[in-house]
Every structure is written in C-alpha cells, then in structure tokens.
Image (cartoon, rainbow, N blue to C red; front, side, top):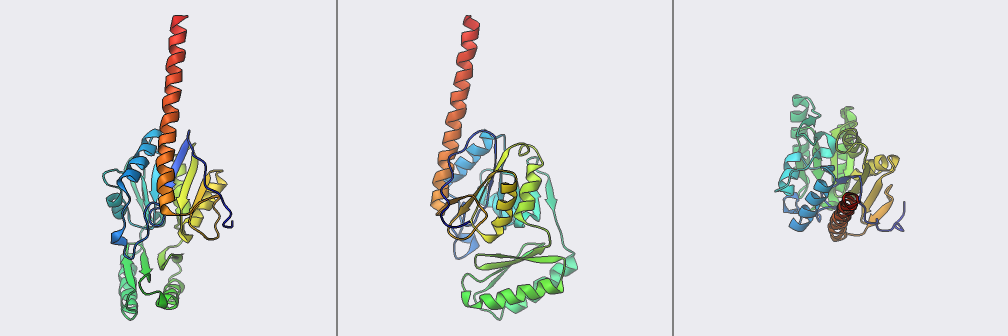
Length: 268
C-alpha cells in the first residue's frame, strides 16, 4: 500500500499486541547498543499487557536476551531472531538451531570477508547472522553479494534484508510465523492481532495479521502490506500511551456500570 495510509484509531477490548523494537519502539541508532525504549513507553506496554491478560509480545530480529534487557524491569513474551527463538507466556522457550559445525564455519567465513570492508559489522546470533553496513553504506553491494553466496551454498538458509543490514537465518523462519504461533496459544488465541513494525522484516507479520483481520501498522514511509501508518517512532510512543490510557478508562467505566447495575438489582 502507498504512503496515503492514515494513523490507526485507538483500540480497546480483546486485542493481542505485537511490537517490533528497532525503528518501532526505539529510534534506530548507529550502533545497536545505543538503543533504548523510554520508561513511560515501557510502562504503557506493561499496562496494555496487564489489561489484556498478558497478550503482548515483542517480535524482533534481536535476540531474546537483548529484548529482555531493553524491556527491563518488565518481562514479556518474546520472539527473537525473527522467530528463530520464542518464549511463550509461561516462560517456555522454542528455539530453532543450526548444526554447530555449520555455525562455526559460517562465522569464520563471514568474519573474514567483512574484515575487508571497513565499517561493516558481523553480529552472530547463534542460529543466524546479521551483516551490518549502516556505518559503511558504500559496501552494500558487496555485503549483499556475500550473503547471497552463503545462501546459495547452504539451501537450509535464507536471506532477510533490512535497513542497512542483511541477515542470514534458517529457511522458513520469519515474524509472520512467530505471530501465528502466538495466536494459537493462550492468552493470544481468540483475540484480534495488532502488529507495529517498520522494516522489510515486518512485512511477513503484516501479511499474517491481515489474514486474521487484525490491525497492521507501518512505521515510516515506504510501500507496505500494512493497513495503517504512523510517521515516526515518537508517534508510536504517543499512540501506545494514549491506547493504554484509553483501554484502562474504558475498563474502569465498564466496571463502574456493572457495579451500578448490581446495586440497582439489590435495591429492587
């Protein structure tokens, strides 16, 4: 869809919430370690989680360990490395692995190749690799060609392009599959999914959410399968805080109405 998409309305009732992190909940920085989510936004996310029986998960290319650190002091269900690792509401983990010999071979191959491209960076995630070129954009063609060659040589792997990064991951793993897995489990099952994301890595998630007649929100410009759009990360922060307050106010009003009805019944 084009850039004419409008901002999503405030939502309440039975929703299952999914949020990408970099470029969605946090502004993208030159180095991943510089990223942070504001405290008031984390508080609002926790508020949404509590109001929806825990049906809120972070869906990211980062590892679950990184996501937990960025979400402190809260602990949410997670899908890390685009869904190659996942933690459900009960704390049970589901992890896709690659043969250790293959991981070691790829690590050595990629590290050697990127050492010839100053400013590029290799991020090893255990079962996946991210080839960053944000600080050396002139090497994008070389990084892309390197990743494509690795995937051609290893059919069990696939490419995932992103903003100034190319990722190599197990084939069949993507954020759409992670969201689908959550939607088959409590407390997400039976709810309407809502997913915010900003990158090519999030398009699989938008597609799954659209199939489930949910709410898909693209952050930033560009073609997308999402149905709604917010322009910037601060717009996302503002929307989340308003949505949490809106849902809380609605639930309080419903509780007050039930109390009033109960009092009326007793008086009759």
